[in-house]
Image (cartoon, rainbow, N blue to C red; front, side, top):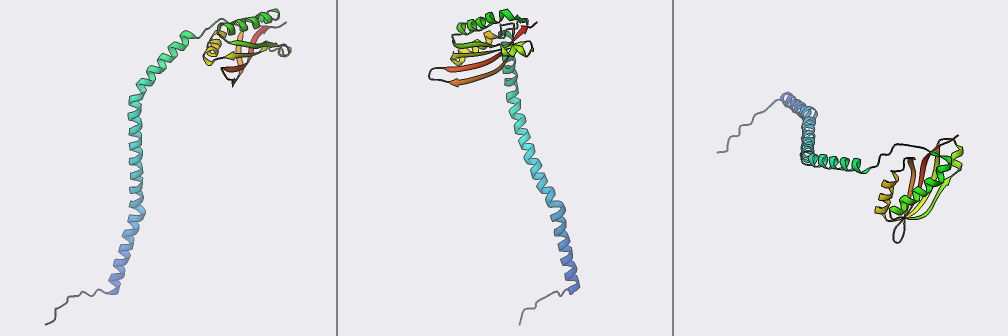
Length: 181
């Protein structure tokens, strides 16, 4: 005897409706749910990155605060703060000698300290001074700190460095305050 096969015959219209329903379900999943799943993964990744940053900051911020406080207290104690004054035109020559003295006390070799008389013509109240000195970086740092003691120094316009065999050649352009008239 042959086995009996139970087959269900569905009408074509029912198969078509089931196919349309399946396409609608796949479309809903594809268009509505899948982008949300992908966005959820992205948000979770961003949360993990933020948590890692927060953990890093939790450990590093106290160290940063401590170092910043130490730096600020040392700089304020070390930097000279003289009362600003201005030179008379006859004192410009003594100012260049004062710059030379600062360089010598800082163990720097002086190549040239020259005021620019043409800068007085502009009547800005400043005279430009070009300095060329030679020495080590640490001596130059000491030179800059000592240069801050000069009450007539307004600003350093430019610093150029060129490394040599046993030191660095520094070229500076300084602006000194001068009373004109």
